[in-house]
Image (cartoon, rainbow, N blue to C red; front, side):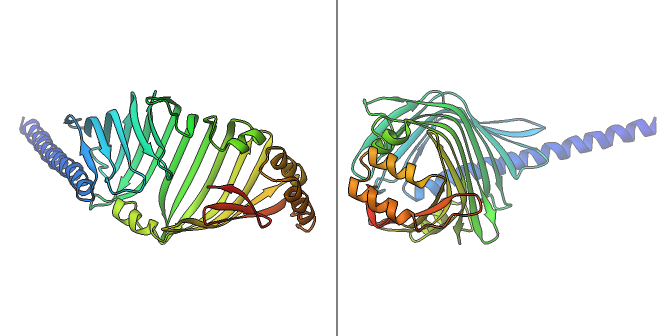
Length: 330
């Protein structure tokens, strides 16, 4: 009998401790969400939602934000806003530093382009899954996000540059003193006027785009750190590949961000460079004389062990140049 009483007391004590632990974690979760919203607001963002719900006792910490609407600062060069139907976040009670997040439903997105363009559209559906890891201070360490069957529907008659993506995955996390980003996109459908000359050469659908890169010296994913890094940040490609039409590209890049935009070089490896130049000529990206000069220059390019030749594109002052010829204005 005494053993039974002792067992009951132990179980009750453990339950009380679990309740206290969960209540403490709940308060920390609410404070963390509130602090992140306050930080965004202090940086000029407008953050509005229609209620924060909390639950999951005792196994999980769970939070939901209904009708979350985030507007970028009005002073931003390219202002934007995103409004989602229903965001849900949860973490296992015994592992509160790893969070999963989901969005189900639709989202309304408002974007502005560098030349005053405006794209107001709905993403139907906007189904996103996320995993985020934080440190003990609540700062974001890494994030993984995936989505499928994204489709855009114009609200004001202008579709965004990309109208649909079958699958998308983006990962970001520390790699030594730098931040590593990885992207994997499948079946990217372009709006009819997006990269129009390139669509003429390769078609309106990019079958796959993969790549990873290091943001040199970026130590945190917190918005203040990212914004500061972006002023003069350097990004180095670990490798990328692009399948567009029946042409496969791969290579790397070294780019530097400045107030004037990105500058640097993009390395492209191709199997049949003469066929590529002909395609660019047929799409009027290269004139007859530019194509002729490019083919002459291509003769001097070495062939690597994979049977590919490497071409270097230069990005500077808003233009992409190939063999010293401007081929596209960004």
